[in-house]
Length: 347
Image (tube, rainbow, N blue to C red; front, side, top):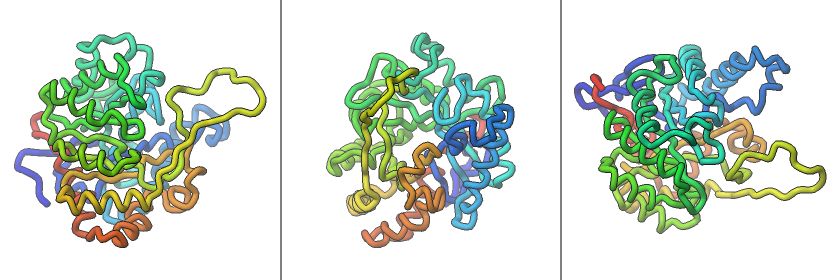
C-alpha cells in the first residue's frame, strides 16, 4: 500500500507518509491505562510520568507484531484527556519513548461527561474549536489533531448537545479534510448519525461509525456499512464492561447497589467480521481494542493477559477460524486506517 502523492498523516510529532504507519490501532486511550492517580504512589505531581511510563510499557509488544501507529481518540475531559486538551503533550513523549507514531483526535463525549465550556458553546463555537485543534493545535500546545473523534451520541437517542457537537465535527471535517470517527453507545443511532453527517455534506467515505461490534444485530451492522461508511470493530477483547451513561454520583448512599453491565463475545465479533468480508466490505472495516485500565479486571483473559497485542495474536486466530484470510486482516489494519488518516500535506 502506498499513499497518494502529497498526502500525509498528522501525528503528534509531525507529518508521516501513510506507507510508514505500519499496522494501526485506530481507537485507543493511551492516558487512561492507569485507573487512578494512587498508582503513582499518591503523589499527584508524578501522575504524568506514571501515565507515560505505563503507556510505553503497554505499547512495547506492538512493533514486533507489525504495528507502527496508535490513534488516541480521547474526548475532552474523559479517558485521560484533560478538559482543555493541554495534556496531549504527554502523547508526544509516549511516542518518542515507545517508537510508535501517535495520532490524536479531538472530540466531545456524551453530554453528561462533557466539560462545561462545551455544553455552553454554540455550534459555531464548537466548529471553530475543532477547526482550531486541527489547524493550530490543542490546548495551546501546537499539537494538531489528525482526526476528528470519537464524537459521541447516547443510547437510543441524540441529545441537543450531542447533535450540536456532531454537526460541529461534520463542519470541521469539511473545512479540514480530516476523517470523522463517531462513538455510538452499543451501536445505536448509527443510521441517524449517518443521516446527520450526509445532511452536512460530509463525504461518507471519510466517516467511521464507532463501536458497531457492540450492536446486537449483524444485519443492522451490514446495513450501516451499506451506506458507504467505514464500520469500526473497535472494542475487541472488551467482552465485559460496566455500562454507564452518566458519571457516578458524588456521594452515593451506603449499602448494596445495582449496576448495569454489558457483554459481547469475541467469537461473535469474529463471525461478524467474516460476514462483512463475505459481503465484499473488507475495505470498510477498522479494528482496535478501546482498552482502558479501568476495565481490564473485567477482561482478564483478553486485555488482562495480552493488552494491546491481543488483536494480532488471540483474536487473529479467531478470525482465521472464521475464514478471514490474513490478506483481509492486513487491509483492515494497514490500508483502511492509512487511507482515512491521510490528508493533503498543505492541510
